Image (cartoon, rainbow, N blue to C red; front, side, top):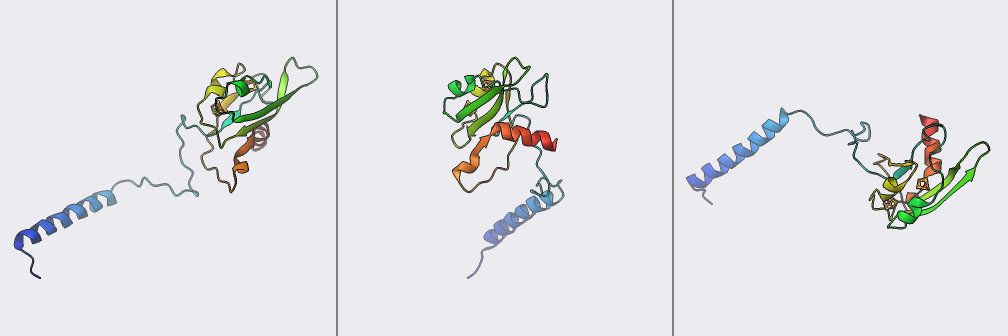
Length: 151
Ligand code: SF4
Ligand code: SF4
């Protein structure tokens, strides 16, 4: 098989153009992250599952009062249940259990918006893994307690 001079020149030009891209990329700063050894910088606007935030007056407890407003407002029915108890000397209930089914949550943010106590926010938990749907059923009160212990 013979290669015509014009096809040869075209092929060589294409090869040099490709090499040029490779050489330029070689001298550019590295943009890949060595995950999981190196954690990613998550955008502040990133939304993972919701989380309970601390009470402004008492940072050791969550700000949820178990008023159920978010449960009624959730369009996906993802907030399975919220329970609370009134503790001695406190005017409002404190959330003792907040079960979120993250498999059906659309991260729409309605629950965060409607909460009259600003008790909800989005977590930045991006590396969730599980083998079954129940692995994505979270008790946000328990998660809040874990975060408190590690902070
Ligand atoms: S998170 Fe907010 S809206 Fe939902 S039950 Fe708790 S206090 Fe009420
Ligand atoms: S973010 Fe939207 S879908 Fe998810 S729990 Fe809140 S209201 Fe429901």
